[in-house]
Amino acid sequence: MGVLAAASDDVAVAFVELGAIILGLAVLARLSDRMGISPIPAYLIAGVVFGEGGIAGPDLSENFIELAAEIGVVLLLLTLGLEDSPQELATGARRGWVGGVVDVVLNSAPGVLCAFILGWGPEAAVVLGGVTYISSSGVVAKVLADLGRLGNRETPTILTLLVIEDLVMAIYLPVVVVMLAGASVLTGALSVAAALAIAGVVLVLALRFGDQITRLVDTRSDEALLLGVIGITLLVAGVTQQLDVSAAVGAFLVGIAISGPVGQRASSLINPLRDLFAALFFILFGFQIDPDQIPGVLPIALVLLVVTSLTKVATGWWAAGRVGIAPRGRMRAGTALIARGEFSIVIAGLTIGAGLDRDLVPLAATFVLLTAIAGPVVTKFADALAPSPKPRPAAPPPSFGVENA
Image (cartoon, rainbow, N blue to C red; front, side, top):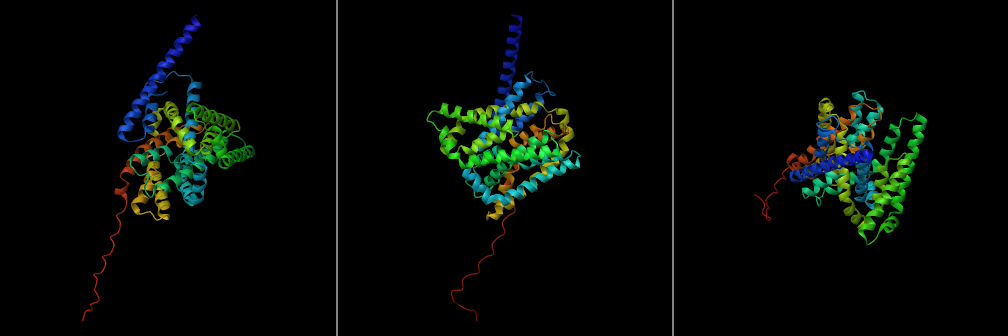
């Protein structure tokens, strides 16, 4: 009886702690919504303040924390994939690949150079380059919707860049997973090749057989649709994880494969679950950051914020200019891309326990925090930041056929 009573007490404490965490997340989400910003920074701050090195670290099971965080990543990447149909993915890649290359080069370079300057080595450089490269689709979409810019001329350019970034992540994440496993050069090369091949096969299947997969899960019952999509996602995520490809990549590609009205229905059904587990993921990520480490990385994070904001603005400005967008639209396109979020945190989360520099995770979290706050604010005032259009020369007055003497 004593063992059962102790177990019951442990469960009760876990319920109380989990309930308090979720209620706190609800308050943060509500405040963020009123302020018109993404709640991701608030979740990260709360995680740091109340985490292991903060005010009061929760006594939750490590297995629970790890599983909840993994489910959050999987559902987050699934819904991001549901936003891109296979056709949009292919079209975006064909039309905007040049802008995508510029995006990769300009925005991964600051992270790579920073890691080498700090003496962290090539593995940390690859990771930090990914953190500074990828914009937050969730934050960008929310900002565009909140500001009423979804119908603007520059918005397709922004979405094309985001689609290409998602494609790059499908290749990048498996490489990072294998790299962090600490394999030898030959084994690592073979593993990376295998991971890329697997990711490529899954991507081709998603593009070629997306319609069949969509019909397979389609049903009039919302309950059956929800269970079917999540079941397939977890199965694919588990298989890809076993094959040394990130579970997040598998979930993302499942989302791409399910498109059309079925994908929209699935997204609306999954969104509440995604919001719950994604919020848990962000705050649980924050729990693992020692707040005493943040002051030491804050100056570096501020430098990265300034540099990568300029590179993102340059990317959007150049890409929008290629399709004839005016200066104000180019500035809106560039500033909309500043915010980093889910993918950057996922990338940093992969490094925990990998033996890289202990400042990498707090630097990534602080950087995401700063960009997720600054991005929406700068985007809101993008028109004021754009150069004023040059005045057109006045047309000469009509002569009506009368010539001067």
